[in-house]
Length: 198
Ligand SMILES: Nc1ncnc2c1ncn2[C@@H]1O[C@H](COP(=O)(O)OP(=O)(O)OP(=O)(O)O)[C@@H](O)[C@H]1O
Ligand SMILES: [Mg+2]
Image (cartoon, rainbow, N blue to C red; front, side, top):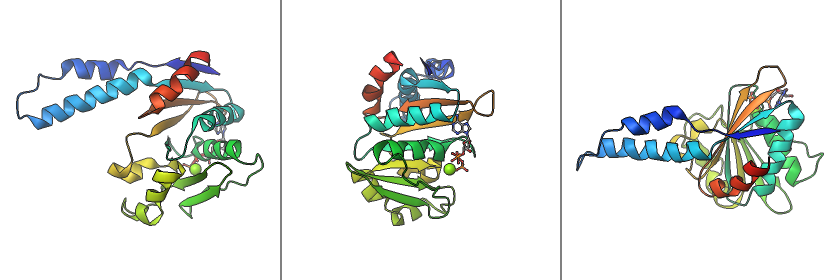
């Protein structure tokens, strides 16, 4: 499995070009803060090139081994990039290897009561408004469970910054994928040793 850390030159350029903050210029201060935050994440970003489904499942299992209650894992990527495949492998790694894990396309959420923790698998593609997410139980999921969220963009500002973002993209061949991990919160330190020995 090829893993490399990715600095993002665009973000670095953006931060360099940011003008000094005039007292009271809160819009500029906000832009500068978010450029700084992105720059920090860019340094911690990890890119993984996966040869096949087994590679995606192996990465999901490695992340599952690091996960704790109240974690939020945002699975981003176009249709068919493998978000459900990743979630399935993650859930099976924490529970039974033959656990049935259907895509929650229509139910929007599927909850798995596993030995150590409950895993909430969301697919928010059909969410009509971010307020609707409260009815799905995000409050309980975010405070007690591990949340795996497909189409996390639908949550807007309800999506916590402390999430681990897993960006899935197609590779050169039908069975290859490029996954970029963007760690928020504790994930920065949790992932660091794994990047070194990958
Ligand atoms: N390396 C790979 N990683 C993940 N999936 C792969 C890979 N190679 C091929 N696939 C296939 O791509 C498909 C991914 O489908 P999946 O339902 O997981 O995508 P998705 O991102 O959840 O789609 P949607 O946006 O519709 O929910 C599966 O059929 C899977 O077998
Ligand atoms: Mg899916």
